Amino acid sequence: MTDQPAPQPSGPARFTAQNKSTHERLSTNTVGLVALSDFRKRRAEVLEQQEREAREAALAARTSATSTPDRSLTATPNNASADSSEAERQRAKKKKRTKALVSFGGDEEEEEDSSGSQLTAARGLQKKEKVKESDDKDDGEANRAGATGTESSSGDDREKRPAKVAVNTSVGIVPRALTKAALRREAAEREALRKEFLLLQAAVKATEIAIPFVFYDGTNIPGGVVRVKKGDFVWLFLDKSRKVGAQLGVGADKSANARRDWARVSVDDLLLVRGTMIIPHHYDFYFFIINKTVGPGNKRLFDYSAEAPSTGSGHAGADAAGTINRAPPPLSELEGASDDPTFTKVVDRRWFQRNKHIYPANVWQEFDPEKDYSKEIRRDPGGNALFFSK
Image (cartoon, rainbow, N blue to C red; front, side):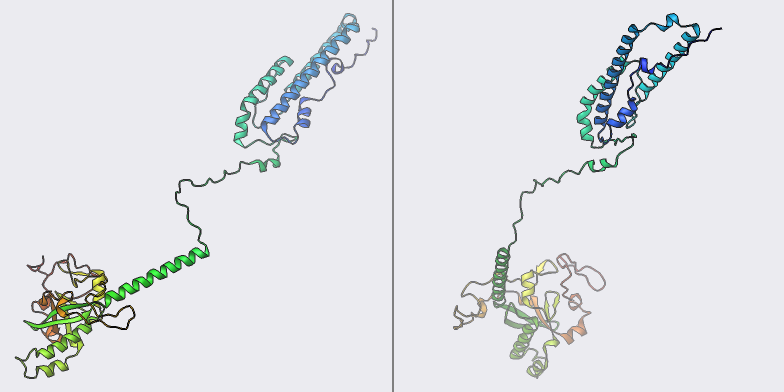
C-alpha cells in the first residue's frame, strides 16, 4: 500500500482573511463611548468593514483557486473527505465569529446567516438610530460602554440637571427697596402721625361736657348738673357731685346735720350708676366715648362725640400763643346738658349693700369691659327675664 501524501494545512489562510474578530474590533473601537447611539453607530461601521474584508478575502481566494490545480481531481477518497471535513470546520468557525456580537444595554443579539443579510441589517439599524437620535438625547440617561461591555463611571456627570427656576411673572407689585433714606422718611411720617393723634386726643379729652344726675336712696333726689371734661375719671365726677349734695343740703328732711354728713362722705362711699351699670372709679369718660361702649338694650353708656371741637367752641383753652385763656361756655351750652338726669344716679355704697336684693338695686351690675351687653337680656336674681328687657 503506497504512502498517502500529507494533508495540506487547514483552510483559514485560503478561504478567510487573517483579520480580527468582530468582538475584538468592537472592544478596540468602543473604548470610552458614553452614549448608546455612538456605540450602535460604531458597531454598524465595524460590521460593514468586516463584511467588506470578507468579500475581498473571498475574491482573493477565488482568484488563487483558478491559478492552482484543483486538488479534488487528483486527491484520493481519503484526502477528499479530509478536505471536505476541514472546509466544514472552517465554515462553522466563520459562522461563530459572525455571531459573536457584543450585547449592549439589553439589546438582543443579531444573528446573520450570510454577509449580505448582515450588511442589510447594519444599514437598517443606522437608519433607525438617526430617527431615535433626538429621543435618546432627551432621555439624558445613556448606558455606559467599556472594553468588556461594562458600565463606565465617567457617565455620572451626564445626569440631567434640574431646570432653572423661572421668575414669577404673575406678581404685579414689586416691593420697593428699603434704603436708609426711605426708612428715615417713613419713621418721620410715623412720628408726625403719632404727634398729630396725641394732639387730637388731648383736644378731645380737654373738651367739657355736662352730666345731669340725681341722688338715689330708693327715690330720685334732684342733684343738678356737673361740669367735667371727657378725659376726667369717674371718681372726680363723684367728688364734684358730693360737693353739690352738700351745697343743696340733700337729705335735710331726714337729718338735721345733712351738710355735716356730706362732709364726712368720701368718694369711695359713693357709686356711679349709669342706667343699670355700676361704673368703677378708675375709668375715665374718654374710654367709653372713644370705644362707643354700649350697655344693656344696645344703648351707649356715654353718648358724647369723639371728634375734636372746632376753634372757639365749648371748652376752655388758650390761643395759638398759649397766653390768653378763653372764658368757659355756659353750663347749658355744653354737650349733654339736656340729657335725662335719672339715667345717671349717685348712690351711697352703704345703702346699696343694705338694699342690693331689692329692685332696682338687684339688677345693677358692675361694668366688665370684656363682656358684650348689646344683646343681653336683663334677669332678676331668680333667672326670670324682666318685662322691660327689650
